[in-house]
Image (cartoon, rainbow, N blue to C red):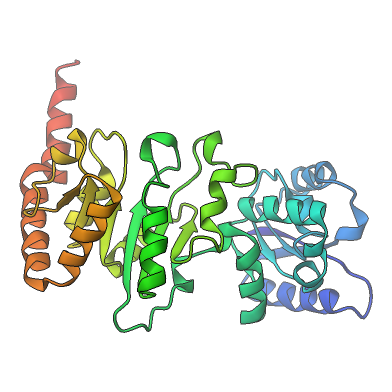
Length: 321
């Protein structure tokens, strides 16, 4: 792969030394890694021209502001490596803080050299929250997972307040929301409705969309999958949870009630308070949990078989000939 590595290359600086080391690592496994001095470029347009001219396929930048800002709007995927002064100093300046947050939203990943640096960054930018930051070694941890595109009809904020209140009383309770912002109402930077995902809503975590394999791994690690939509056709997240042997708690709307039989293949709630009540009953009744999981798995196999669906569509298309 042809890689662009942007860094501040002043002699005898930590960033220059780190950049050289990373370049060696990547070239040792066969990548072509071109090291460029971030101070040599004024804006993202110049980097866009460089990427086009040298046919780079991906990029890395050391220092979230000095290097990362040059990759904004990049046509190739990129990752960020924190430099130190970006988190310790530049974060104090409002405009730099805004730019760095925007860069993180575009980056595929971010690398922190210390746990402390990681925590400082995650405290500032909600897009860095992930389920790995939730304490996995807590014996009685109960992680609820809401998977949805962040838009009005999915109502992702519906349970935030009650979850936060519940977490304050019982710190082992967490809600993780995973999904892309597909509506300007839920844009990351300028929407006050994202305030609940800051420290004012402890126990609630937000993660942007992740690859399907990682998402399935997260589902398997959670206690239950949650649906809070105002309207649904047929929720793929619910069906996947059923197939993965994870119980589902869904808002009692027609689309959800069409595939969930209450206390048989899942649990249906009508308001946040009932959600907490049903969740506690599920947590305290392992027999109910096993029965729901078993029946849900059988339901999916019978009514939503991938093989049957494939055959049906293949046969339908024959009618178009």
